[in-house]
Length: 294
Image (tube, helix red, strand yellow):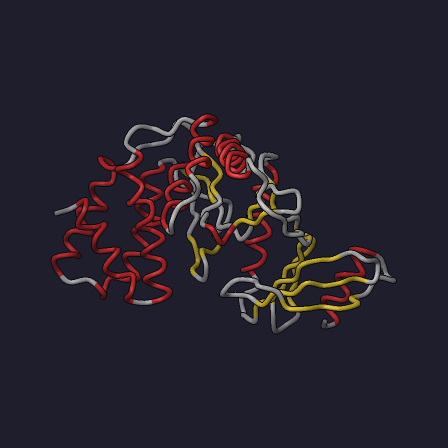
């Protein structure tokens, strides 16, 4: 490990503590990741990204802290972020992996619902939607400029930005449909009963099972919005167990019409994949657009 990480370790654990050993571990598609074995027998998780923009991990740290502040669901504790002049890094507590206990999905559904019901006024006051700063959805900057309206926020800060980035991929007929779709969002979406803190990128790859068998949220793209957007994302790539959704509904009422709205929320993620990874996602985007605008 380089001197910057070593210095950070000493600042956290004491001047005599050093990195005894390290090994690469799975850390997603974007970052390098390592398990660090310390001389005091502690273990920590290091993520590193050789990018010029050190805000990437700072944004992740802020998101994890926001989730933790709700006191509803576990997430990795942030130890430090840093930049050594050529790479940004993030130090987290190391989560020992376990196996799902019998009620794992029920616990997950209930805890996520409680996170969605948690008061967001300390995060973003005045019943607004967005976040205190921009962050990242995968490799894309996520614009979180606050707005008083959830629908307007989703139109401008989510779909509008992504459609603009992909505009040249659509033909004239679909561009007209997209324009109509954005104009009609007031008739297609609903304002929430209350603002919710969202994980923002909640699929099977962004939670862990800890050694106690309970869920732990990782790799957030947090913002304050409608909880339906998080639920929709859980269904995009295969979905979670039915026990998860049943348990969620016991804790938080899902409004009528959600089934008709969820594709609109997932359109944002499909557009982001289209802009990041290319044309294989174009047909899915067009299918959803044409579902709402003939």
